[in-house]
Amino acid sequence: MDTTKRQYTSKKMQSDHKRIAIIGAGLSGLLACKHLVERGLDPVVFESYGQIGGIWKRGAVESTKLQTPKNFYQFTDLPWPEKVADTFPDHRQVAEYLDSYAEEFGLLPRIQFHRKVTEMNFLGKEHEAATWSEWGSSGEAFSSEGKWNLTVEDSLDPSAPLEVYEVDFVILCVGMFSGLPNIPDFPVNEGPEVFCGKVIHSMDYAMMGPENAAKFIKGKRVTVVGFHKSAVDIAAEVAKCNGNKHPCTLLYRKPPWMLPDNLVKFAFGNLTRFKECLIHKPDEGLLLWILATLLSPLMWLFAMLIEIYLRWKYPLKKYGTLPEHSLGKQFRSCVTPTMPAHFYDAVEEGSLILRKSSSFSFCRNGLIMDGEMARFYPTDVVIFATGFKGDEKLRNMFVSTFFQKCIVGSSAPLYREIIHPRIPQVAILGYLESFSVLHTTEMRSKWLAHFLTGGCKLPSRREMEG
Image 1 (cartoon, rainbow, N blue to C red):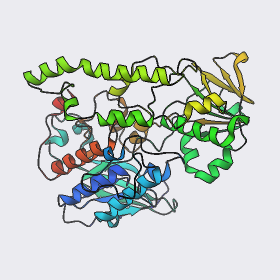
Image 2: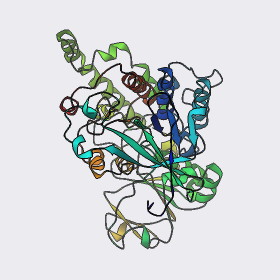
Image 3: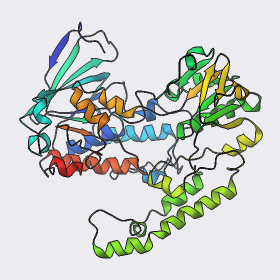
């Protein structure tokens, strides 16, 4: 963003405590704010939109619902209301639940809405930060070696003067599934520029809202690219709207395993204390090591039995949706989409067409698969459900090229999935895959609040990167 001719206004965060900024008021931002306040800190939350809730308010298609049973997506200090009887609440119910959390713990007054943080500038000796053996030079949350300047834009009036806040610590809660859409690159004259139809990202489709989205796809030949949660949800939605008169095409390269709701409930119902004994853990004792070694084949057997059931129940081989990898391997990645209701019924009746292709290109009136004109398929709308560039979104927050390279070029994971060993006085929440994102983020928020109040000190940078 070009800000060379913009006016700047220096702002002070009025606080008797260390000045802590939280960027984003989605699930992670709300959890961070609540637990910091609980420990006596005084954070300020910057939210670029006019409401809390993140993708549950702005990035959900009409059919979106929880992929985990609600008891695995529940705050430890605020249960779901009794009126929510569904095992898998829809996006509206989840959004209302997040609203009730913010109200219950008085978080709304701490949120500055329509305030978009456009960049973060480290006020310190950046070249020295690269040589520190301890995080922030001391291993503690706050350091005298530097602070951060946050440049904040009024998202309702981008021409208004930019505001600059000086803070002692920044917590990034900007989310993995929003922001910069991931659109594949195409050779010249083979991309969307030669296509006469419409090309959008799943984020654009979700932002339309249910009524406008239905009007947009009604009576059109729609191709959805991808095969993860947003892709199958949108494809099922389009197929239901248009029927077999204008079937929706789902275009993919490698299909994942999908679980129907009943199997998801079964799998989560088996996440017990006994199951913990089947997994090796860091620094485990000899007895736990022996126990996990002896019992770990049960994990393989559990996944294999589910695979056998899925092969028997659904026509995976018939439609080219039988994954090449094992379900056990996919479980370990914590990325297993749920199957929309009546998904294969729509395939059987012809309202949803599944096409597997290693590559494709655009032409004037449709798509060409694998470079073969014989595999030309006409289409009116292409929806890329191909994810987001999460690392780039984080990278673009930083002014410093050194910190930008740390975010994108580092192979080392975040320490405790929160702290980057080379970026001082910054924490990142919500950039993880988990079977229960709410629970893991809540635990990390508690640890972060403990760290920010002097409850612990970080190990050396070498240890964190090891």
